[in-house]
Length: 304
Image (cartoon, rainbow, N blue to C red):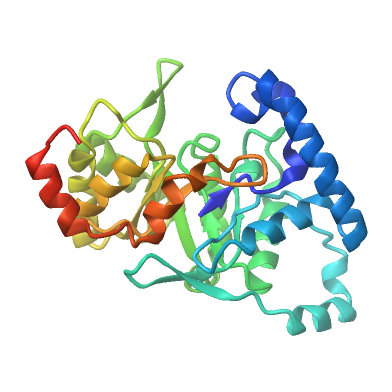
């Protein structure tokens, strides 16, 4: 699961994220500017735009990767054209499996965050619901949201879009773990909070079960096993089907997987952000490997 895969986002977002993202730090900006120019030149030769090339690069990394680019735009007039319907029928979005627990999703997902928050003011619900329906009709059925987007309003929007039989056509991912307390951002993985957050998301989405439930950020104040214990209970109760982690270290992924299978890991991976290739991607691709052996190692060395 990959977010922020599109290179065209690199420079328009610079000012807003200059203090948080490595690619916007002074030592990296000039290097990435040259990289962007190279990618843009290749895109021009291929007859596409840089974002299309960047997305194609990411999709070429393997059949276990589902990029989730976010958008708030679609040409709704185009949807009415007969020619567009013919093109849509001829184009089939592949399906892939995430993890080894049985989750199958579209090879490209749709990030819904920008529809309600962060990228400008919230967009009209009616337009965004049409956009989601267009994506689903086109074969992009893997929808990604979070309780912090809005906060809360994006889950409500997605819930509205799932009405009328759409829920049965999609794989829905949402997240918990980031909250605002007295105006301050807080990361929480406490079991009671995990359960309360899940119940609240189910209510906002107006569904009985979440397909993929991510811990949005890791609460380093608690052993990951404590949070996973509550998530495991939610699986057993049928409130969530699969568990994911977002922005977790390789060590945390292994520890979590030893407690209960991790189906997906969400992270930033693009031509601008490739540090995850060193350790995290190999960890995931080894099946978040030999969990039993790792569990034995944890018993021998609790500080691992």
